[in-house]
Image (tube, rainbow, N blue to C red; front, side):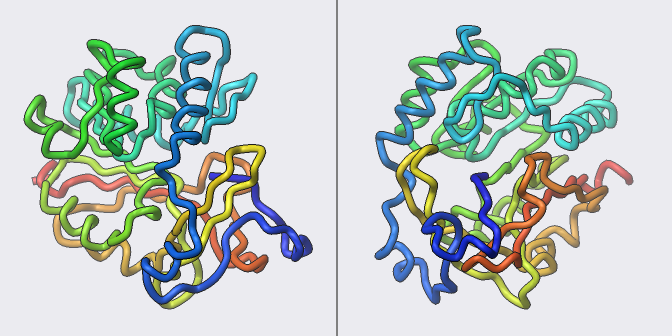
Length: 266
């Protein structure tokens, strides 16, 4: 996620704003996420990581030290242990491989057999051209990926909150009956129902604005009560995401969940 501004920064124009009644309403004020500029900056940054000229990228920004997502790594290790074999990972909304490059030093082929990214079409095209290999693959949809291999674990890191109809997606995801689901860096708030906001990104990251949901936790997880156990929940590993401000009020937060299919306990 992006830089967080305290409630004192009331004149700062970047962050999360509003309580919109519909996707169409917030889109009328947004630039969108499909800008070629965002893709190109992310591509250039990750190519530097791939080629060993930088060590870590997040949200197109380069860092000189890897910030390991230890909660996610724990989920990957536990999943491989439960199945007693390496797992196939589907990274939904995984950009051009940001989390893959972040985690690869600690998750070799003995933990993950493959890392498969489902993304927007222009990301898939770029991913196939510049990043795809025998281990890292790119697909336009979950169904396209499943035609190639059986997926064990689905990772959704900072992605569900940017979908137009997230609950319809969450219900469909549950119906696939995957063994493991990991939600990471997912936005929630303390309200009684979901809140739809406009996220305005600081220009030092890239110039963009787009709709962003803050979920009500109980309603979010209800899609999985019948077929999954929530093994654990965990805060975001990214500094500053424990509290997210909407309209400069600290009412939100990023967190994650590790879900295991109940069939594995039969």
